[in-house]
Amino acid sequence: MPSDPSLPLFPSPLQRRSFLKGMLGAGAGSLVAATPLLAQSRWASGKAPAGDKVRLACCGIGNRGKHDIQAMHATGLCSIVALCDVDMGAPHTLEILKQFPEVPRFQDFRKMLEKLDNEIDAVSIGVPDFAHFPIAMLAMSMGKHVYVEKPLAHTFQEVELMMQAEKKYQVAAQMGNQGHSEANYFQFKAWTEAGIIKNVTKITAFMNSGRRWHGMQVAGYLPDQPVPTSLDWDTWLGSARPHAYNKGYTNGDWRSWFDFGNGALGDWGAHIFDTAHEFLHLGLPEEIHSLKADGPSDFIFPQASTLCFKFPKRDQMPALDLTWYDGVKNLPPLPDEFGQAVVDGNIPPPSAGKIDTKTGGPGKVIYGEDLTFKGGSHGSTLEIIPQAKARDIASKLPAVPPSPSNHFANFLLACKGEENCRSSFAVAGPLSQVMVLGVIAQHVNGQLKFDRQTKQITNHPVANALLAGPPPRKGWEQFYQLS
Image (tube, rainbow, N blue to C red; front, side, top):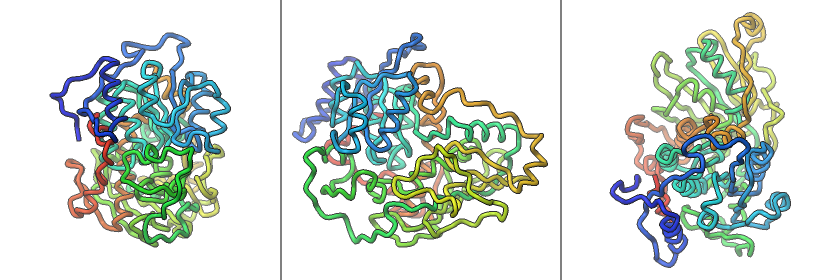
């Protein structure tokens, strides 16, 4: 839903505040016309002065958001100027609140951006998948740089609009798949450029650790419960369709539900096949096949699933099938020489459960013309198998340069005009859309044909409607008109 180009831009702070007040007052029927805001930046015309820090506002301060804040702060490149969480003061937020006791606090990102507009350069977004979109869109439209956890958004259309907004507002925009700034990224890039990885026709990717929804059986949504006094449930819901509160939707349990999360694929796909997607120029698939769906449900993710993404020939690269396996017992077929999983000690555990290296997950196998590679997740590097083959080619492997900056420093330096985001929305957007297409195939348990030019599912009307998802709740429509 692109914005109307005939509408005027609102460059002044007063006009921006009017826009925000219109959204904040939506419940009272005082919506204003949705209008793109003029992007502004202290450093729009060049690099930041030496030593100048990025003023960072943080949305989501517990769980994953907490780690993002601490990692950003540890770079020494930013100052934390605002903290925002819909459940401010809940147990999972206390560590950050104690670490930054003097920083202004908010429960509603709209109020934070309205009040501190001129004091914020960038926004980190570590909230549930379905809530990424409105925060990122409003921040970008106000000229704020954004760091958004993976996957970028909940629906295919939301990702599309976020890519358009990144380009329109010319902000630094980074998705939080840390491996894009670690050894895996630079190795994959060097090996593809040197022709070590070439003519790949098959990738097997897998995540076989336990997930929150494993063992769940539901016939509908969860029963109503009293809303905790500390929680702003309406803002938590954001643009999602109405739901009565139940604690089973919060604190990571939202990942289990199609309405809120993107399952194991959305959670881990961006850490497992992200570099293959970028450097093999996969783009979007032309077919997505649901090959297995144990315990299919209209509400929660399958207990186990197998998906095949079929990518066509790209320039000189052959067609490629990427097959995804999740579920504790849904183990992928692996080469006899695979051995133990490739595990990086810095990989965080799943939100529930532990990484099980004995089952071989999370990881991948990449089948090239002459060589087969095994890999893990995040920044872990590829290994050539079998070992005899690795020894034979060792002298021909190119040097892999070290990373000049970790993923958080890369983003903050990009805000200052000193680097480019390695996982910009232009790069991470199509990757996220691949994962969303997989989620749709899981949801309908079907075989989908996708037109890469029109970006439509051509053989399944129900699945095609899921590209946009349900209409946003009343009062949240305007965020979809900011690109």
